[in-house]
Length: 271
Length: 192
Image (cartoon, rainbow over all chains, first blue to last red; front, side):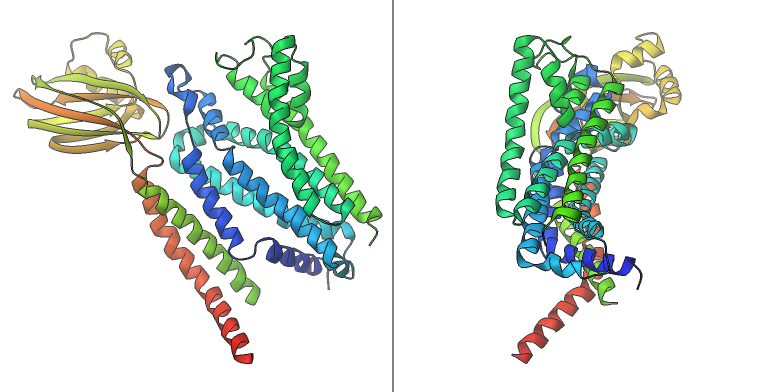
């Protein structure tokens, strides 16, 4: 028996646990409905934004409120509750008897918990956006994808923390609560950052925040000429290269957290 | 085999869930944001611009037109100023308009020859929308129109058509899995 078959066994078992009927269908229904209900062209109504990639950014960013929260809930449920209860009930120990390295078991679990959820979230939202505004999405697909990458980075960061807490505590309840608190805490910290940057007139706070939440640098890049942002317009005008740099840096932070999770699961997890 | 049935079945139920969400979206009523209208007449071989606004894919334009002759109704995705600047004068000659359209075919959002009826236009991007009535005939034509701007969540017809495909396909894919689930359930009940 090759290594592929046990991996698929663990993966299909994780899928079965994470997406019991009709959980997957309910989330898919909410993603689809949420995309249309929350889509907004907001600031694009003024003529100077016509044919601008800011329209694509505004439209995509408008979807990343409640639908993103629904996505986060699904991820936290899968990582904290799913993996946590597997650790608690001893199911993970059963997997250890498979001819598979530990890191492959964690990969199968994360592929189900995060990978499938992400594929569903992105494919449904981008397809729905295409139905709604085909010319905007096809013309500025790069902007749409960059907006998703920048916004989802902080969600993955929290998911990484939730994973570490779940592995450390070997149960998911507390990790789930920590994840939700962190999700809302990030919004509060974000607002404080804007306030600090505005009052000190220094972009340092925004730049630090952009490393863990690159949506800040992206919003500065797109909204730099808009008057309603409570920041001086010349405070920080990032270039596209800076946006890509901060987004890349944020994913390095996320990858480091998951790497720590892998190391802990492979070597330190006392099971 | 059983795994494939489950895989396709869950794919099917996902499609059904997407279809029902689309169907629900298509039934959301539109809200009227504003209206405009007017009446007048166009002499042969001339055109008139009547309405101009920036619209988004979540804003539709419903126009009811009544005329005593055939008019060509255009909704162009440019401002009237762009048209006049291109033509180079304000004579409103149909020749200038046709030359503009020939050079800028992408600007035509909608084109219809009609004397009476309703048209609906929903843009696929954030764009200017300019209503133009043109009289290609040989006699003066009297017209009257009313235009309503509506707010929509999604283009209803497009979304409903998608739902009409995804729901049956989803059911077909899910049927073997649902049958298997039902069989397992009845066998379990019988065993007890």
